[in-house]
Length: 142
Image 1 (cartoon, rainbow, N blue to C red):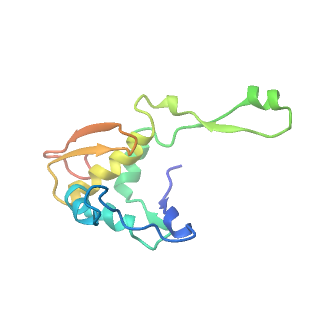
Image 2 (spheres, rainbow, N blue to C red; image 1 turned 90 degrees about the vertical axis):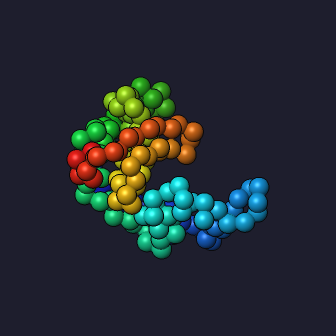
């Protein structure tokens, strides 16, 4: 089942995170973020909402791309521990691309298209980059 919302952990932190700061210039990175990120993603960074709705088009793409991956039960680990606990894990090997790339690249491209982008380079935050050429690509048709 594809989720309907992203969870915003910032709402549940004990105190708000400080705004992004440039480590070299010691001032705000928000102006830079506005040049490199889709506007909706910036809005989501600062939203007071605990749950952010996932657009239907993104949910449909997740489903077509094999999200979510199946849960598997770790029977061998359960037997080794011998404490009666059931252990489940996500089997990300079902997707040759991995999970995080798809989870983040799809909405990044979706929101960039809505902002009028013609080409998009996405990132996962873990240094894994992917190129998505979106010239002539309709939002629902990607």
